[in-house]
Amino acid sequence: MNKTDALIIGAGPTGLFTAHQLKLIGLNCEVVDNLDKIGGQCIELYPDKPIYDIPAIPECTGEELTNNLLNQLKPFDIKFHLNDRVDEVKKDNDKWLIKTSNGKTFLTPNVIIAGGVGSFEPRKFSPKECERFENKSLLYSIKDKKIFKGKTVTIFGGGDSALDWSIELSKDSKINLIHRRDEFRGAQATVNKIHELVKEGKINLYTKYQMSSVNGSDKLESIVIKNDEGEAKILDTDYVLGFFGLIMQLGPIANWGLNLDKKTIQVDTEKFETNQKGIYAVGDICTYPGKLKLILSGFHEGALAARACFKLARPNEKYRFEFTTSSKTIKNRLGVKSD
Image (cartoon, rainbow, N blue to C red; front, side, top):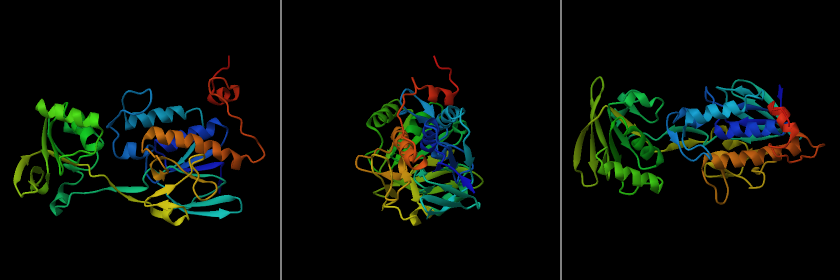
């Protein structure tokens, strides 16, 4: 059995930063994730997609952000359990007994759920024949943007992912952007940039259109799109990308007795604790009044949850807040020489 001060469920950016905050204040932690790699959605869904809202970092990719967070964790010895899923969480006196799909058990006073949106899969195109080209020339996420260089890429969607990738790929590819409405759900600055690129001829924009069918034998050759009036257009294309959001499945989390709001977990904003003492939720999976689904919000939530863990992990000690710039204890943990 693994005994630890805190168990983090989820190895995405929020989970990684929460681990850093736990170690910084002297608590031990281990991390479980059902993916086969560290990085969560950043690595699984958009390793090459530019991210613009990390403070003090003008632009980075999901992979770069993950690597930076891992570098930040290098001074600490944190054990990761990948390709494993937490199946059962039950009370054991004043601690939580956790069992995973790989048969591992953990005993801890603190469980931090940083599982993003839980288990997820992309919403897919409705035409059945699209399945023939999935994971070849019809994709729902981008893992290597270099494959699109010099190609014609048709992107479906009206949210941030579709718009951001249209802008990014338009640097080296011919882009068709298709959305079923005139209005977009992305940030206004991004929408403005899309319209600029349309005027410059770098993006062909088709609104009020949806996928009707795909054409090709061994490889994708063209697609047919139709508008609300039934008018059809044939577009030659090398690749099709669909960004319609994710279908979220909480999985075993739904059976842990937590206070759920649709597919998110309600928390307080002092400790980010759920209705179960010692179980916290941070990142996209938690909800509270004024919640913003931003990575930077997850960092803030993780920092507060980590400090709340101290009381349960060290009931006979008093937590004393220290600034990282002046604390000799923290500098020693980081291997930094004190002045």
